[in-house]
View: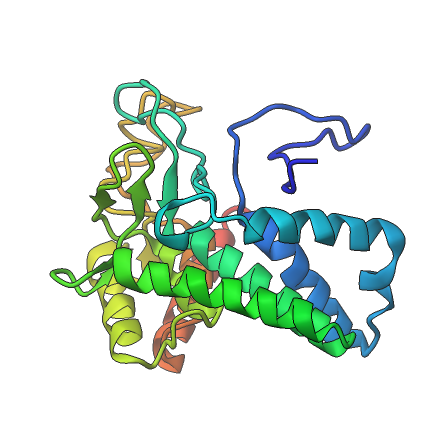
Amino acid sequence: NAGYFHTCYDLWTGDLVWFVEPQLDPTGLFPLALLYHSVLTGSYDLVQETAVAAQLKKIETQLSAIQGPWGLAMADYSIWEESSSPTTGEGLPTGYFTFSQSMAWAGMSALGRIHDTLGANEASTAAFNRADQIKTAVEEYLYMEDRGGYARQIWSDTLDQDTRFDASSSAALWTGMIDKDSDRGISHTQGLSDNLTRDGYGLARYEGDVYFYASVFNPGGCETTENMPPWPVITLFTSWVEDEETRQDRLDWALSRYIYVI
């Protein structure tokens, strides 16, 4: 009823299993995935099924509500689930993450296209207007002029920028909210590469990341030899906005590291 998905569900029963909440990236991803399915299959029957349409309506209501300052979508803990400090263990406030705002924009844009295809012109216009509102707020309040990139987040309690580069913020570009070939898009991509590249062509999650090394929450102790270890998954989806040569280098790097797992 809240208009968003819980973080974890039991694989066998479907029952809720509590973990860090709220995490709102699936809220935007759900309509985006449904749009992708509809375009790919050439059929919009799925989005019109009673249960799916009802869920989309709840999501649209949630994303349409201005629950943050300046027109931003609701604050959360996406994508890295850090409701507690990785160094002290003390609780952290939610934030208006560039990643989550990008997914909210993508979700509203997808809903706009779905409504348009189904002939709901008024609903389509409203959805696109809300998407534009989110984008405008991100451009004005999350961009760091001095660093030439988008901030990791704005803290919900103080409204201060967290000025660290975070690879998840590449979502602003690969969702299409920010043109990756614009001056800001190019500068942001370069900032991610300059500040987060590790071990050749891998990318760390964000500046100063201590997880798997010095964090108080490391599940297996010191699993790496230093802070800011590269993560293949974030390396791969950040590579979507890079040039073809760099993208291939990152893909080759990820494959070489995954071989040890496979």
